[in-house]
Amino acid sequence: MVITPELNYDQLTIAEATLIQQQLRGHLNLEPLQIEAKTIAGADISLDLYSETVYAGLVVMSYPDLQPIAYSLVKSSTIFPYIPGYLAFREIPAILKAYEQLPVKPDIVMFDGNGILHARRMGIASHFGVITDAITMGCAKKKLAGQYVDPGPSKGEYTQVTDKGEVIGYAVRTKDNVKPVFISPGHQMSLEDSLTLALKCTGKHRLPEPTRRAHEYVNRFRIGTLTEGYHEFDSRTLF
Image 1 (cartoon, helix red, strand yellow):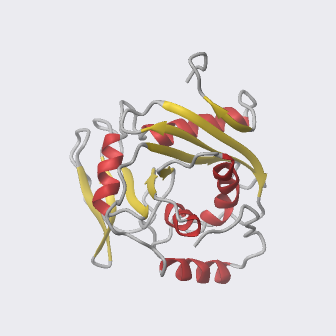
Image 2: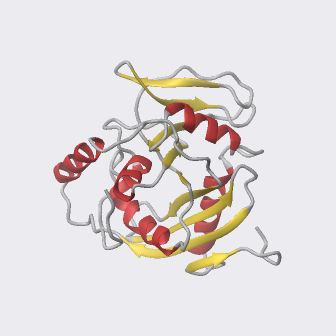
Image 3: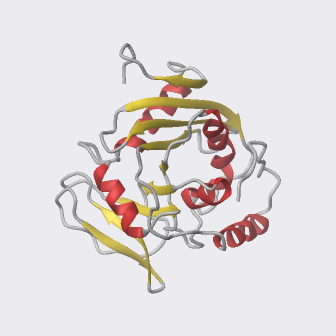
C-alpha cells in the first residue's frame, strides 16, 4: 500500500481514525527483515502541543557505522487534535512530505514513537510503514500500551512488553541507570529485528542515534538555525 504526499487527515473523526487503524492493521507485516540494511533514518516532529504548525524531519545515516548522510526538513500544518493513540494522524502527513523529499529512500526508518506497541498495534511507525511500504520501527520515550517489568540498571538490559498475552515490544535500558525506551517493530521486521537494530544504534545517549539526531534537527529547524528542504552532509558540515 503506497499513498501520495497529499495525504490529509484533518477532517477525520476519532471513529473514522480508529477504523483506519483497524484496516491498516490487516496489512501489517512482522516477518523477519528481508534485507541487509545499509542506511537508517530517524524521523521526528517538533510542535507545540496545541499548535497547528508542524516541523518535521528525517536524518539519514549509514548503518551500522551511523555516519550522517543527509537530512530533509519540512514545515507543515495540522488541525487534527492531540489525542494519545492517534498521534500518527497529526504527524504523518508532515513526515511523509519530508520523506518524499529524499531522492534516495533509507533502508529503514526509526520513529520517535511507537510501532506495534500500541493498543491497536498501529503506532506511527506501523502506520507510516504500511501506507508507504517502508521498513520501519518505533523507539518511544513513553509506554503507550502493555505491561512490563523494569529491566536491570545496566545499558543493554531489556524486558518484554506484553498486552493481552502478546509480546508487543521491549523496554530497553540504553544508558546505565536511566529510564528505558520502548522499542517495537513498525512494518516489515520482527520483534527481534527491532531490538537488534535499537541496540546497534545506541551510543552514549538515552535515545538511539537516528532518532536523537532527528529530534535535534527538527528542533534546530523550529528555532530557525536550519532551513527547510533536502540537504546532504559534507566535510564542512557540523553534525
